[in-house]
Length: 385
Figure (spheres, rainbow, N blue to C red):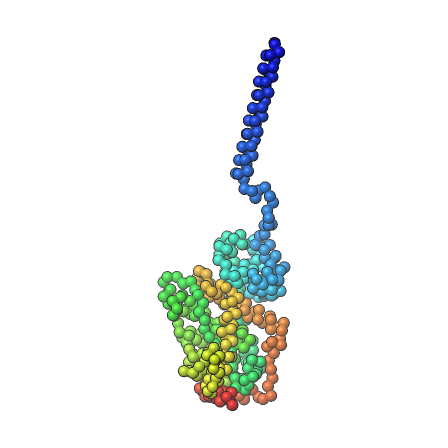
């Protein structure tokens, strides 16, 4: 073979190797590019945040006081105390797949922050059926708990509350205040018209009795939003657990309720609400009575305000059966009392009963022999002097 032929063969071989390498590079580049664009970037890196199950998330909150209060509306010590009460005394039970701590946390988180069932499912990764069943179990335990905590602390009211001391002896017979509030409800179409209130919303008209510590001593549930406050009160008075005032004792009520024994209302056609006295103070005897009456009765409005601010679910109760909706509202009131009682035990000076230097029973007995209109006139005369 000539040297020229050898040179030509060498050039041909080099060109072939070059094209083979170029082709291989193109194939590898296309493969790598396909892998790059077909595969999410996240798979090339470890997850940014570790996965937390619902139970682990609960534990994380229970070890952080600020997070626990934000998500469960109470501090960890209060949470564990409430959990122990519900398990020991009110039938809340664990199962192999779902323990009571997680169930209570789920209930409080949903009620406190207004979460829907889908949001609960996303956070706890439980089926909707399991969520509904567990929420019902906690609601039943809370409802039983409510029967023992939504009651007067001292049914005989033997001592004078500090808030009444500046008015002594004129309001010595006062044992609390009554008012109603409307809570948005989800009602099926057949009964919807009965629950539409004067503002055009479907609501429950909830009646509550609150003592001077802002504790609920009675909550009347299930009445339609279209019912008048006085009609709701009459229905509640017929129930077995209604705390009727004993002779000489009375509740403070507004002008929407009748003036009757045990129920002291303001003078009508006279300034009453506190904001009406801001520009011009009370002048007449009746106005002075109404001003002090409104100042004391304001305790029930403040209790409703605290309740609705803490439990966002009360802004609109989710679509459950009507009985379940009422249990949820009662449960919020029960936890309100539980937290308040716990705070008063830790700081007893806030509500320390006071002894007075006269026989309080004599003033109470005098109230029992008079009509409420006369009691009202007597009080207004006394506080005006």
